[in-house]
Image: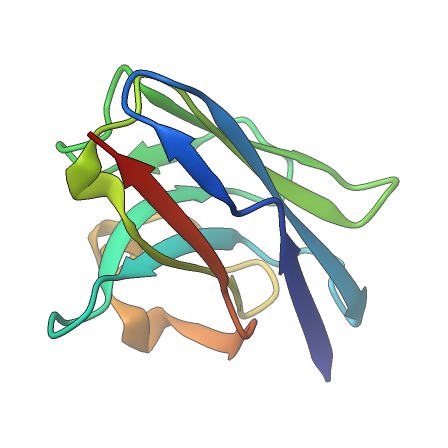
Length: 127
Protein backbone atom coordinates (compact mmCIF):
# COMPACT_ATOMS: atom_id res chain seq x y z
CA UNK A 1 0.00 0.00 0.00
CA UNK A 2 1.19 3.52 -0.86
CA UNK A 3 -0.07 6.79 0.59
CA UNK A 4 0.47 10.09 -1.21
CA UNK A 5 0.03 13.60 0.18
CA UNK A 6 0.40 16.67 -1.99
CA UNK A 7 1.23 20.17 -0.79
CA UNK A 8 2.31 23.55 -2.11
CA UNK A 9 -0.74 24.66 -4.04
CA UNK A 10 -1.97 28.23 -3.62
CA UNK A 11 -3.14 31.34 -5.46
CA UNK A 12 -0.46 32.86 -7.68
CA UNK A 13 -0.39 35.54 -10.35
CA UNK A 14 0.16 34.70 -14.00
CA UNK A 15 3.86 34.50 -14.77
CA UNK A 16 4.66 33.33 -11.26
CA UNK A 17 6.12 30.08 -9.99
CA UNK A 18 5.11 27.32 -7.59
CA UNK A 19 6.72 24.11 -6.42
CA UNK A 20 4.42 21.25 -5.51
CA UNK A 21 5.50 18.36 -3.31
CA UNK A 22 4.18 14.83 -3.05
CA UNK A 23 5.19 12.96 0.09
CA UNK A 24 4.92 9.20 -0.28
CA UNK A 25 4.81 6.49 2.35
CA UNK A 26 4.50 2.74 2.17
CA UNK A 27 5.94 0.47 -0.53
CA UNK A 28 7.34 3.08 -2.93
CA UNK A 29 10.61 1.40 -3.91
CA UNK A 30 10.85 1.15 -7.68
CA UNK A 31 7.65 3.02 -8.44
CA UNK A 32 7.35 5.67 -11.15
CA UNK A 33 5.55 8.86 -10.14
CA UNK A 34 3.23 11.10 -12.09
CA UNK A 35 1.44 14.42 -11.78
CA UNK A 36 -2.03 14.95 -13.18
CA UNK A 37 -4.42 17.89 -12.95
CA UNK A 38 -8.16 18.36 -13.10
CA UNK A 39 -9.92 21.62 -13.76
CA UNK A 40 -13.62 22.12 -12.95
CA UNK A 41 -15.82 20.37 -15.48
CA UNK A 42 -12.87 18.71 -17.22
CA UNK A 43 -11.32 15.28 -17.18
CA UNK A 44 -8.15 14.57 -15.27
CA UNK A 45 -5.19 15.17 -17.58
CA UNK A 46 -1.56 14.11 -17.59
CA UNK A 47 1.06 16.69 -16.65
CA UNK A 48 4.37 14.87 -16.09
CA UNK A 49 5.90 11.57 -15.03
CA UNK A 50 9.29 10.42 -13.78
CA UNK A 51 10.93 7.04 -13.53
CA UNK A 52 12.11 5.53 -10.24
CA UNK A 53 15.74 6.56 -10.70
CA UNK A 54 14.77 9.94 -12.11
CA UNK A 55 16.63 9.44 -15.37
CA UNK A 56 13.55 9.48 -17.56
CA UNK A 57 10.65 11.92 -17.62
CA UNK A 58 7.64 12.74 -19.73
CA UNK A 59 5.70 15.99 -20.09
CA UNK A 60 2.42 17.11 -21.59
CA UNK A 61 2.95 19.45 -24.52
CA UNK A 62 1.10 22.19 -22.67
CA UNK A 63 3.73 22.33 -19.89
CA UNK A 64 6.96 21.48 -21.70
CA UNK A 65 9.63 24.07 -21.04
CA UNK A 66 7.69 25.50 -18.08
CA UNK A 67 7.30 22.58 -15.62
CA UNK A 68 9.96 20.25 -14.25
CA UNK A 69 9.30 16.99 -12.44
CA UNK A 70 11.88 15.62 -10.02
CA UNK A 71 12.13 13.27 -7.06
CA UNK A 72 14.24 12.63 -4.00
CA UNK A 73 14.00 8.93 -3.15
CA UNK A 74 15.83 9.42 0.15
CA UNK A 75 12.95 11.66 1.22
CA UNK A 76 10.25 9.63 -0.60
CA UNK A 77 9.09 12.84 -2.21
CA UNK A 78 8.31 13.90 -5.75
CA UNK A 79 8.18 17.51 -6.89
CA UNK A 80 6.68 19.58 -9.65
CA UNK A 81 8.37 22.92 -10.28
CA UNK A 82 5.98 25.15 -12.21
CA UNK A 83 7.25 28.33 -13.85
CA UNK A 84 5.63 30.92 -16.13
CA UNK A 85 2.22 29.91 -14.83
CA UNK A 86 -0.85 30.71 -16.89
CA UNK A 87 -4.53 31.00 -15.90
CA UNK A 88 -5.19 27.80 -17.85
CA UNK A 89 -2.92 25.95 -15.40
CA UNK A 90 -5.57 26.44 -12.72
CA UNK A 91 -6.63 23.01 -11.45
CA UNK A 92 -6.38 20.52 -8.63
CA UNK A 93 -3.02 18.80 -9.01
CA UNK A 94 -2.76 15.15 -8.04
CA UNK A 95 0.30 12.98 -7.74
CA UNK A 96 0.14 9.29 -8.55
CA UNK A 97 2.31 6.22 -8.14
CA UNK A 98 2.56 3.33 -10.57
CA UNK A 99 3.52 -0.31 -10.12
CA UNK A 100 7.11 -1.11 -9.03
CA UNK A 101 9.61 -1.29 -11.90
CA UNK A 102 7.03 -0.07 -14.36
CA UNK A 103 8.98 1.91 -16.95
CA UNK A 104 7.82 5.10 -18.62
CA UNK A 105 5.95 4.29 -21.82
CA UNK A 106 3.17 5.79 -23.88
CA UNK A 107 0.81 4.28 -21.28
CA UNK A 108 2.36 6.56 -18.64
CA UNK A 109 0.17 9.38 -20.00
CA UNK A 110 -2.93 7.41 -18.96
CA UNK A 111 -4.51 7.53 -15.49
CA UNK A 112 -5.05 3.77 -15.76
CA UNK A 113 -1.28 3.22 -15.41
CA UNK A 114 -1.25 4.51 -11.85
CA UNK A 115 -2.42 2.51 -8.89
CA UNK A 116 -2.21 5.06 -6.06
CA UNK A 117 -3.43 8.66 -5.92
CA UNK A 118 -3.22 11.59 -3.57
CA UNK A 119 -6.13 13.83 -2.66
CA UNK A 120 -4.74 16.77 -4.59
CA UNK A 121 -3.67 20.37 -3.99
CA UNK A 122 -5.38 23.41 -5.51
CA UNK A 123 -3.41 25.68 -7.81
CA UNK A 124 -5.12 28.89 -8.89
CA UNK A 125 -3.46 31.26 -11.35
CA UNK A 126 -4.96 34.73 -11.60
CA UNK A 127 -4.67 36.84 -14.72
